[in-house]
Image 1: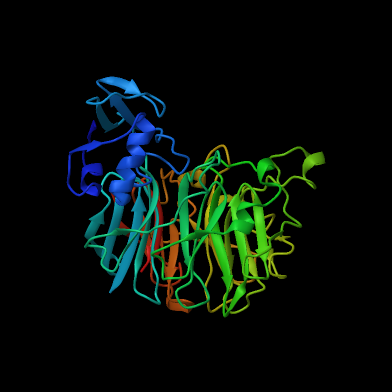
Image 2: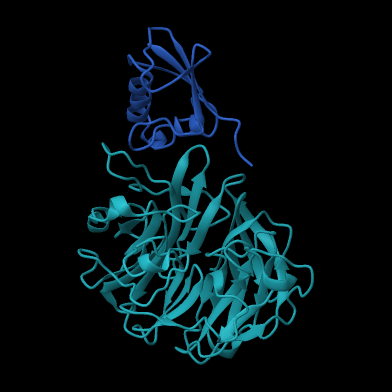
Length: 86
Length: 355
């Protein structure tokens, strides 16, 4: 199981949970599993083409990950808004 | 009491008050860009188009802008493609119970038949064969204007920056262009007849004479008397200081009326000569009169965006409100004859609607 850590407002959409354990062999798989478990989060991290939104960063064990990044059991994913904006 | 919904770069502000005495009653979506917000007068339900820089475009719905908002469902493009929904620009009540339309980028129309909680993409418009040739304006390929026909849900006019006017007579099952007479000065003369890169900035249908529409174009103000099939230039030598601008409002009591807020030019999108003035026509665009009593008259270089001009009521007592990217909001309670400052120091104003 992969550990997924979320911050607000995503954690609120995941039923108030800041940490979840989910199955998946890639980042995309795990984020889709997150959407199945918490449908309210659908469209917030991945867009409708299952691409990570432009200003969302997904870190895998502290390294920047992409949709296809492969995962091992006990890997840790952090989903964090980028430091962009104005 | 009047309620104003002010969509800004940093959240939605609900202002309540009378004439020039308004206060902020609620702020929602702090920090998030709110492109547009409105209240459906049929249901009393409020809608906010929020395009988070991080989490993408959504419509949120509530019965109380000071309370909880609920995310509407279905506002996405078909999975398995290459395009995602970019932004949501407008929500408009339809001509059937529970029917609403939403316009977004890239040039997409959504329909709701349950009062705005769930939405479906209009497939016929999404599948327009010329779509690969469409070009966006500076703000994206935004569908900002959805002009329904009072009492007839089959007839709709759409406007997109920069894909011109689209018309349907069958409730959105088929669509056709309505661009005859528009002159896009920003493309070479020899290309103007054929181009579909037509940057409409705003479009309104007159409710009491539905075949009449007014348009603010990207350099041009136009009127149609044949339901959008063709367009007549009413911006040249008619008294406007410039025919460039974004918003437009009409007086429902007078089919010869329209209001625009000219900006200097496409390369200088501020109020001309440092003066803020609304221009009014009461003769269908044959002439325009400046209405600026009470508006900043010196050193005022404001930008008023396409959804940031609204009206409430009609006739000589019609209220008008507009907001600028400076964060100022102005109001008139005599159809534009005189103006006061309703709010200032708000974040840059994207939209204004009277609830």
